[in-house]
Length: 304
Image (cartoon, rainbow, N blue to C red; front, side, top):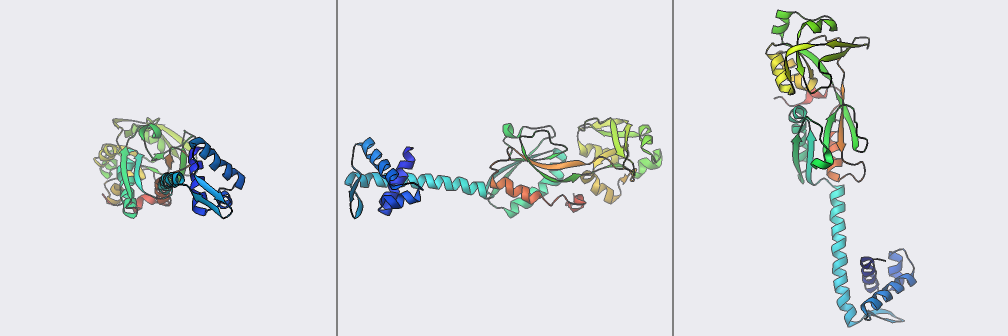
């Protein structure tokens, strides 16, 4: 038995005045507790307790040892309680990672709302479009798009991220509005280069049949805001996440193209380093996010 456990037993024998009562607390037998206290006395080469038919009493050395042991046991219990409280409650520094555009447009207002509801949480937001190692970067929770590859991570499904084809009315008036996916090949495509296979756009017909269209264009960027600006400026047709395009669609600066055809949607997940022993702050943030990505969730975003 370790020394801390032995100290704890000794403290409870003194405080209960009984070996049998202490044994019951530790779910063991009276002889076990008696032997443990005797072993401690043998190790220290000093008598700690006087035993008689009425119970136990401290010797002078035992009283000194009891005070020190009581202090140590209480400190350990307090340390355990602090950690357990941190594990179950939303408090402390929460490091959140996500992509640049999604983070700025979606996660920032949600994180601010979460902070207002949980005043004991501090937030560190990290925006990065490339894949990041959560453990190496010290990220508590990341919001990611698409299929998940790393099965060792913990994850919670949040919703879907739809994409749309858009262009400005000025561009369509000058270049014509495509009626079929194949016609996209003859238009100037504004290409978001962070999507795998960005030179090929994939759509689904109204019947759900997949269609692939090779596209070319004068502008290519890994920044969605740049692609949106080019679309608003009349430079071509762009494939954009709905949340990026929504405000410009509502204002009429851009309109949907091939509305009866659908682009593939991306899954949205909250991802965290391990599915086991998830800290309370992470659990609280994920619970806060769940339900925020329901049907047409992009319409609830604050205007910018």
